[in-house]
Each structure stands twice: as structure tokens, then as C-alpha cells.
Image (cartoon, rainbow, N blue to C red; front, side, top):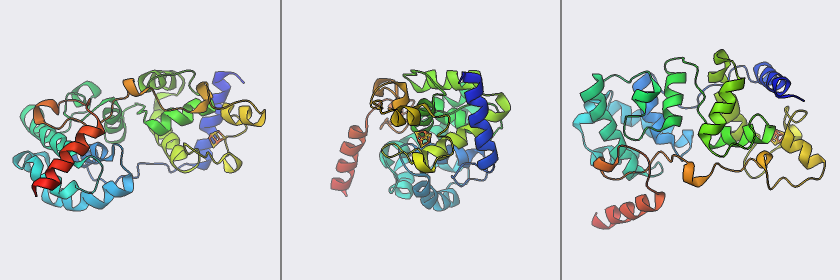
Length: 265
Ligand code: SF4
């Protein structure tokens, strides 16, 4: 099947069978969405939704958050993953929102990517969900599912996958396609045990076809392997405000700091 027909069939299936796919994060405005997406990096949406009601009650906007400090923000988000670096990012992000954007969340990817803790994936989610712009955010689920089905070919990084998807999916579908692929990866095409028997996409899926033919699915583009670690933009990372501008450090650094924090209590 050629690529055009593959995309057509897959998108038509999602439209028919998953018409209401949308973000599982709870938010009421672009600021809350941005904070929630930063918190959701390497964490479940469910966990994020548990901490954000109290967080947003205390910090209803960027101004309030900018007037606080990472220590106080940490106390509201300590049950999510990497709370130290996320607290530092959120505070630095709120300060920059106040100082450079008048307290408002910007609506373009380049502007968003200037904010501490915001990488390309987060920026794409925000412009797509909050501002209804055509953008494709590629997280680990989108990357894996797209590769398995064959929507992307030999993409080694999220950016490569994004470019391939954007070149085939009409702009008006991009936002929904992002949610379709994420939710499919979360609940059906899971990383370790994809539920191919109950998947409506198996008629067109390269990974399933290879499995049925007895071919190895451990290698190659259809394996759904994670993107190269070196090129991943892990979003919760830097620990010091100075370094909090962008992603780059590891979870190990966060764990170390977390250990020091608990010892000092
Ligand atoms: S058929 Fe299997 S591998 Fe293909 S998309 Fe469905 S669950 Fe994933």
C-alpha cells in the first residue's frame, strides 16, 4: 500500500472510531495547559491532574507563580516525577512570562521554546491545543505508534518523525492526529505488549504484518523503538534557574538533588 493510501485509511479509521480524542490533562486556559504539559514530562496525566487543582488555586497565573520560589512550588508538585527540576523550570518560566510576555503565554513555537523547561514537543502541544494551530507534537507514544504502523520510515529523532507526519497529514487534522496517536499508544499499541488482536489498525500496520509473517520485529523502523536517547529533548531537567533555560540534564541529577533535599529536612 502506498503512503498516501496508508495515511488515508489510518486517519479515516481514527476519525470514525475515536472522534472525541482530546488531551487528558485538566486545564482552563493556556497558562494552566503550559504548566500541566511541563509537569507531564515523564509522568502520567493522571498524576499531574492530582496536583494541579491545589497548584492552580495557589498560583492562578504567571504573576503569582513568579512571585513565589521553587521551594514553595516544589511543595505542591512533589508527587510528580522530577519535582526539583520541574519546580525550578516552572518558577523561571513564570518569571520570563511576566518579564518578556506580559504574563501571557505566547502562541508561537519559537517564542514558547525560549521559556525554561519548554522543548519542541511541549511548544507544539501548546500551540495546537491552546491556540488551535496546525502542529504535531511527537512524544514517545506518537514516535512508536507512527513507526510501527509505517506512517514514518526510519525516523531517528522526534523532529524527523514530526517532519514526516506533517508532510502527510493535512493541517486541519494535525491536532487530532496527535491525540489519536498518543491515546492509541497509551492504551492499545503499548510499548511492550501491543494489543494487536483488538486493534482496528492491524489491516494496515507494518509491525503487525511483519509479526504475522514471522519476521523479526525487534529491529528496523516498524519495531517502534524509542527515539535515540542522544537526540531526545527530555523536558524536566535543569536544576538551577541559570541552567533551567533548556532541557539537558538527566534524571540522575534530579535524583541526587532530591536525595540532598530530603536529607536536609
Ligand atoms: S496492529 Fe499492533 S502494532 Fe499495529 S498499531 Fe495496532 S497495536 Fe500497534
